[in-house]
Amino acid sequence: MESAQDQEILHRVCREVAPYTMVPQAALLFTLESALHCIELDMKGSIVECGTWKGGCSFGMLLVQRYKYGKIVKPVWMFDSFQGLPPADERDGPLAKAYQRDVDSAYYYDNCTAALEDVRIAIKLFGFSDEECRVVPGWFSDTLPSKTTTLGREGIALLRVDADWYEPVRFVLDTLLPHTTDDARVILDDYYFWDGCARATHDFLSSSGQAYRIRTIGDFVGAWFEKKAGRSGLLSPL
Image (cartoon, rainbow, N blue to C red; front, side):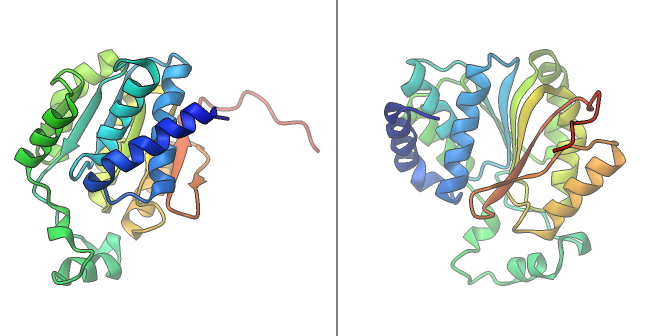
């Protein structure tokens, strides 16, 4: 359980990054706690977020380190197209397609587009260096493969997947899970919100033969699992 000082830090960070994120507070708090968790356990690797929008979660994972430890311990990789979401397909379900058609909705956010220059300005305002906040613009299919050598060498201690649709979620899991450290948390932002994210997650687990347990964040505001080795024996019966 976090101390009162830790709680104060977490809520301070939530307030400071609020203009840069759409993530519900319960999910944001879990993300911040997970960043501290992987540091406290001295897990190998950097932090990676795929799907950053204006950068709020990534900034938060850096700020919480600065306020807790007085420095950035683990850099954060920020992967985003900065061109909005790709077109939803049949695997994403009718609600996803309806979302992309309803351009006048208050929740459309220009198809989740964020201006790269605005993100870079925010990085400077927060005072993060290029080494601490590693921005990689472009579609995941173009950018992730080019960084797998570096990420494989560093390892990934925390992976946050906020890619909405089936194809990008599946691509992230297929490409980055092999480089994720054992016991690392993988956060699935859209698991309960979009059908494509849930389908991609279960298809990935099935095709890779993994039995990771899906866990819920807050009141169904997200999901996560830990990358675990297979069980070596049965649990004792209750």
